[in-house]
Amino acid sequence: MSMTVQKISDLVLIRKISVKDPSKGFTIRDLVEGYMKDSDDGTTTDSVFGYGGKLNIRPSYQRNSVYNEKKRNAVIETILDECPLNTIYWVDKEDGTYEVLDGQQRILSICKYLAGEFAVSADCFPTDLPQDFPNLQTNMTDIAERVLDYQLDIYVCKGSPSEKLRWFRRINTSGEPLNDQELRNSSYTGAWLSDAKARFSSENGRGVRLTDINPNNNKPEPLLNGSWNRQEYLETALEWAAKHEGFVDKKDGPTAIEQYMLKHRGDADASALWQYFSQVLEWVRSKFVSYNKALKGMDWGAIYEAFQKGDYNSNIIAKSAIEINDKIIELTNDDEVTAPIKGIYQYIIYGDGRYLSIRQFDEKVARAVYEQQHHHCVYCLQEGNQKEYAFKDMHADHIQPWSKGGKTVPENCQMLCRYHNETKGNRW
Ligand SMILES: [Zn+2]
Image (cartoon, rainbow, N blue to C red):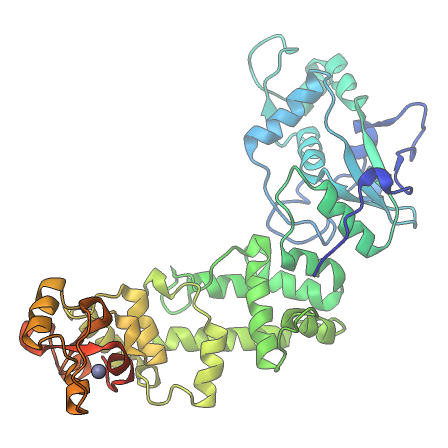
């Protein structure tokens, strides 16, 4: 999908802030009014407000994140040094409220400093000791007043949700760009999404816990890649549920996830999403009783779906957890198997021996057999074809395949032409 990005300067609706007294400018005193200490622990998805409740500092399209200490302190030091901060952008919701488009971390740093949550050092302090804001208010009132009167450079934008997102993409150059799921979350807001985020996008959400901790032993044994904080657990849960309900990505159209979100956005809660997700992960944990990090990030939703349909009935994955575990140990100890543990898991699930990377004959052995066969292919000869092949056009094949107990020893090597190598059944 292509998107036209308008330059900020082309947007007529952007104006410098005049929400307070335009002659005075907008100050930190205005900003922190009504900011609640402890209202933001960085792990919840709740909104955080400032400017007397009129400014939503963390609207739905912003991620929860914890600003690193160094950057956070630098914001406060800049203010104490009376140097300018970069421009902050807000969106005018046109109902008397605003939301932060860009500058969330700077605003939160300011609010948290004024709430006394941390201390910094600055040249304007009489000693090198770090000072928190309540201390300034008690002992260095002039500096405290100067901080409160510090003017922020704020631009306010008005526009539709899609325009806001376009601005965000354009403006948000300092931070990491929003990923697809973060953008989707901005368009499908509501009770259902809030519930989904509570489960999959907050540190103690049930979906996050189930993903990261094995409930059978309480150990950290994560099964998904990415991070809940970047909405990647939510994205995976949505992807699995969407595919389960039969949605597919449409070329140049909505993705399966978007179709799913559109269908469910009006639901009262996300219990259906949770139910399917937990069913998948519980199945995984019931099949693999000993954990290895190679289990993390496999497409468990698709695997579970195919398993339920019976696609893997003749594979090892259909057996009991104990039998599966024994097979994993056996394959791990098999010298003929060179695949890493992930390949072993894939073989257990998908049944394809190529995942095992069975040991290959080394070139010395292959060349010796090539000469013994006088450059002919064993199968071609059987078909009466006497063609001589170049060494590079032949493949060293296991006469007795690995699955029938064949080893990678010279006596078990035969040279085949490319065609017969590829068409030979039971290749591993
Ligand atoms: Zn051949």
